[in-house]
Length: 112
Image (cartoon, rainbow, N blue to C red; front, side):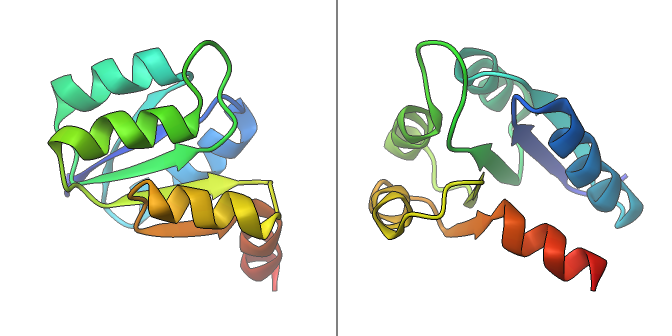
């Protein structure tokens, strides 16, 4: 397998879709369903890339996870979310995310 990518995403259908694309492209994919599990997986797995949902259940949302990871690591972070507000995008990028992808746009492009 190729480089390891960690997906922190609570929606199983979205995670499976993203995981399928990445595995078909030759990546080794690890998944966590909330922020606490995601931070533990990040520390244990040491991925080359993190794909992070902004809206996570529990006490740690995507912004909190991004902030925590950025304190200790410069691993690329891509925020993946259904939120379309420009302020969400700016906050994510200011906290250290490298890119911000809106799910609706991504899946529309994949279909077309």
